[in-house]
Image 1 (cartoon, rainbow, N blue to C red):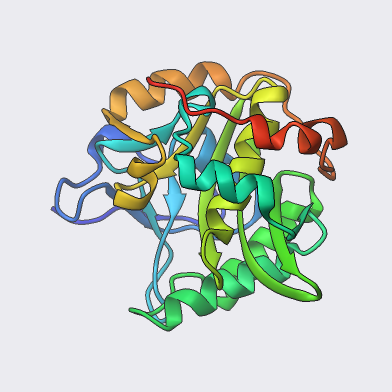
Image 2 (cartoon, rainbow, N blue to C red):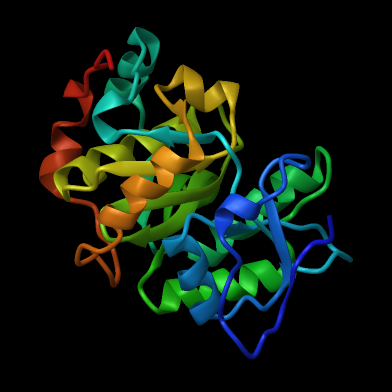
Length: 244
């Protein structure tokens, strides 16, 4: 079966049901990484994922890993860490740096899909108020964080990194606490990850995922520059693990 090639002059994707089963979820190649293409993709449960030297590849895997904000699993040791940590956490102040560190973390392992073109594209999404980051600093050093795309009541997580123990978990807990407060209902984690499953993420079918986001992305989103809510920060040590 040949892979559909997308014309960059026409922002349109084939039906996600036509995605390959091997490799799981590969839907199409081509198009571009403009804001129009990326927003069209996310609204349909599609995301770009490719390595340097490859064409832009678009994916919609089945099953899909998701995290319901109310289902975040916070262990006793993580709760203890939340009470005692002295890190500085910020939203949206260091977007490009967080992306760069996520890319570097993957280059150290098996190569990064967060290419320079990908970074430039998501920085434009960030400037448009749609992509967001959470940064964890120890003094002036960036030691953890994550970034993703927010549409309606869905946060599409893209990548996270950690240079010190628990700093990516710290970023995730702060994100989830705020998303709950802002009435978000779903966090897309894309593909299966033991790390995220240990924190409460679960797999659902692609059909179920698409039904959920079709409804949720239609809501008015929380765009623009995100800031931490000081009241939520004060209550952060009271975050509890919920059984879902």
